[in-house]
Image (cartoon, rainbow, N blue to C red; front, side, top):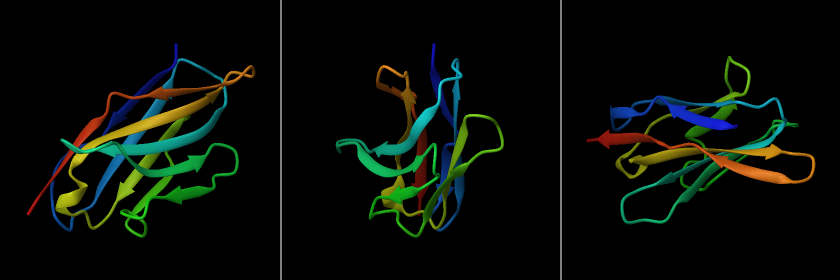
Length: 120
């Protein structure tokens, strides 16, 4: 069974950097795409960025463009979200989503999220 686990969240100050990790386990099926999303209390889930599992092509939401970077991690089936120059609006629960290719179709697998809190 595919499992997605995020880690690396915590309390940081505005202007600091933080790196989140996302590890997918339980399957050797190809991961077509990795997404990062976030959700603040009382707000809708917001798209942060994505990376193609094949080409490595990346795209980002406007609110984080130029500050956040998605990259492959050191381990197999690992990606990281490098967050630079964070601000108060970046406080949220951050979720990783892996789009897995089951050959007969694709399926989204979400993690439980990791909390990021930015203080002034």
